[in-house]
Amino acid sequence: MKWREKIKMKWRIDSHINVFKGNPIEHLVLCYLYRLLEWFAITMVGLLALYEILDYQWLAVIIVSIGGICLVMVLKIGSKNEYRAYKDCLKARQQAYEQVKQEDMQALRKQAWLDSANQGKTELDQKLNHKE
Image (cartoon, rainbow, N blue to C red; front, side, top):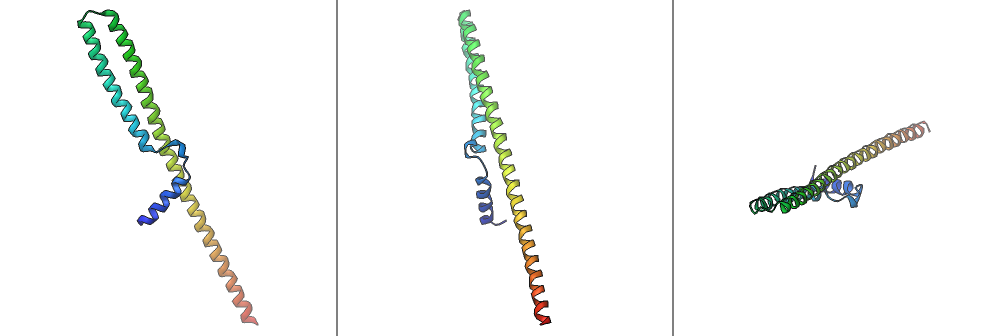
């Protein structure tokens, strides 16, 4: 497939996609960003809890642990939602691609039918003109 045809196909596919769903790459980047922040939060909460344990501040250890667990849960939920949005975008793109392919096939069938109808018409005209 030539590059112009690829661009035309991409434009046709993009015209079938809801613009509010976003680009799959954006969702994938955000998913990995959430995962990176999640590991950063786990590391920082672990270091803070270790510091509080060594400083013998048990109430602060409990507060930091609960806060850290909540932060990690929020980041994990965000990561899962972004990954689900990424998968939905990929599925929407695949469905749009299939729809464009189906439209192309219908256009080819219609063109073939019109060509055969025109051919039959010209043959009929030739027979009628030959008889005269």
